[in-house]
Image (tube, rainbow, N blue to C red; front, side):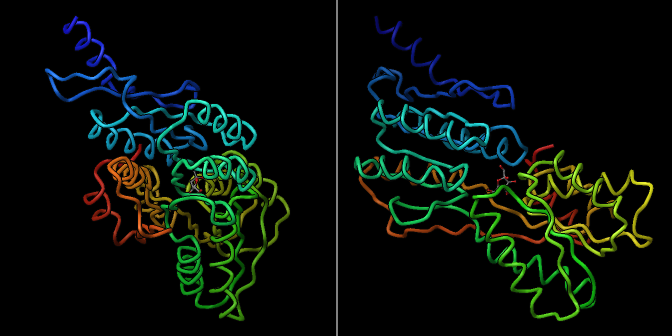
Length: 333
Ligand code: FRU
């Protein structure tokens, strides 16, 4: 009997690693560190995580680091994660399904503000709610862990304006509509650009934080022959897409525009910076490990004292790229 339990615990302790774009199943992990006191995994409290998507590089790294942190707490709670392919209505369904299982802590990385009422339902049911990365309006959540997107936007705007010596046209490629991260990255940058009367901004399309839509948008934009001197994309995937379109285009500006993105989670991006293709990125820190740490504390009775935990950013340029790679050996490919 004991052997059976141990075997069950050992199997359950294996954290499922595959979380690629095709993996639509819930990821679960649980188990027990103690050899003699192995608890049935089902008797452990549930920590549930509604992830926005598990497809793009930033989320894949976020998932991997979250699971690593979960691995340190396998005797304390069961963990289930469900991605929603950046579809808000799908995520509302995920949260409602989780609520039926009465999780002791609910982590949510909202797709957009449209999931607000589902998050509030959990909070009203007295389930501690930890928001990761994107936020929702109001204050019906326990704590929000993420970067300061307004500040990142400001820094990106300042970097671009300085690189252009205060004069030029910036094409801004937008992240997913209804996401505070996109709004904040836009507003922060606009604050900086407004200080430079010589800077003009062209608002590009909503390219959903994805490479291909940004590439398509840029292809069409370049065909118009409208001059521009810099591309500010709300994330790196879109900066890569825009650069690739520029690189392959027949008609393009004579001087290579500046390309700036946000995330800094991929070796590909750092390499492109080293190669002079992209100019800079701002690290958008992964909130998963901190979120799991807070969930573990909550289960021990320690509620967070702050409503917002801000994680720091780092500017990556050609000058700092090698050091950045050394400091971050586990970047996504
Ligand atoms: C990934 C992502 C990141 C971005 C974040 C903003 O899904 O688009 O690239 O920094 O979400 O919420």
